[in-house]
Length: 144
Image (cartoon, rainbow, N blue to C red):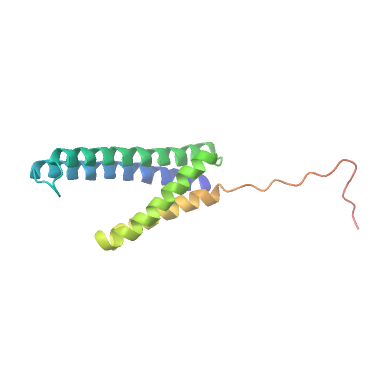
């Protein structure tokens, strides 16, 4: 069950990356077309900052998705750096989920919590594996 969960998590993160880039593209276009300053800030700077934020957010989500996808394809736990990436992504989704409830609504909150649940399930399903204890040489188990 852990392979499909990791692959679904990766696909959802890839879709979210596209959505974030598109939303920021719309916001950057609106900020540029309004030609209004916010607290004296240049509209071109606001537009450029929105484009950069969209690109960076999209790249980070793709990185998280690739980490989950590689874990799912290999059916092995991600390394230390991969786990840190997935944990960071889960924390960001938890915080953004709390923020979106008030700003966007319950549907956005539900989506963020589904993504958070997928990330946590991926992390837990690829948790540390228990290795059997090796028997010291010369000792054999005896029957009673």
